[in-house]
Image (tube, rainbow, N blue to C red; front, top):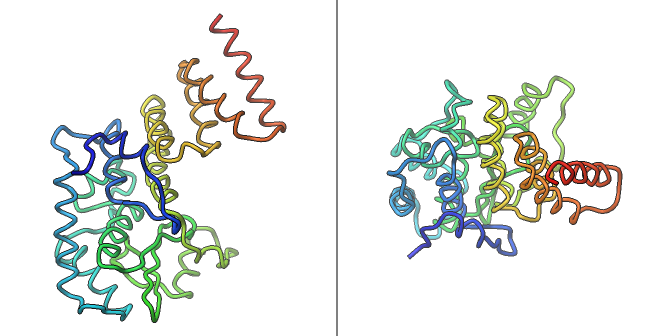
Length: 280
């Protein structure tokens, strides 16, 4: 039996040497802590059973030991997009539901990173190497077999992106001067993928000035990545903004304990001193 407590799931996350995690389970656990998107009907086991069905559909299309990267990509696309009906939500991209994996499963629509997590889960269950990439502004996947690799865009119909297509996409997002860099092809740790998913939710809440809810999302992010000093700093400043001075002191205290001496640390220490005076 998998643990039912989403906080326990996230706090016990421990990546392997390859940086991989039970990523769908972790994303669903985070979704259960979503301050705006969670529902009483959301159950981890039911969602994972649905994903198991997708895995079975994809497995049926692959011969045992299949190592053709194009056939492997086609099997993932068929099972996830065609049979299960998932697609990128280009019509209501900023909908908060697109960053909650339960709502993505319910609506069969989501952000690139949310759909990418489905590909990662299904592909790995089949023994395939599927990882998120450090491509800026748009989440991409690398599918690799023993003989070849390809880059998949989970948002745009699971299409394969070659260098020319990636360059065009990059320029459309960052301007005509933007160029591809080797680091854009590098795989990222699953922890970073989960943080990227939660950051989409947090950013949209911040843009809507829903600061208390954004603070709750930051708490979830810190369960996933408790050693991320930048998240502690952000959590502290946001708690200070919402008037939760004790939480701000705790978060900023964790930040200054993690970073070396420098101007920003001194600035945060000065803020902490001011908060202590307000609490006294």
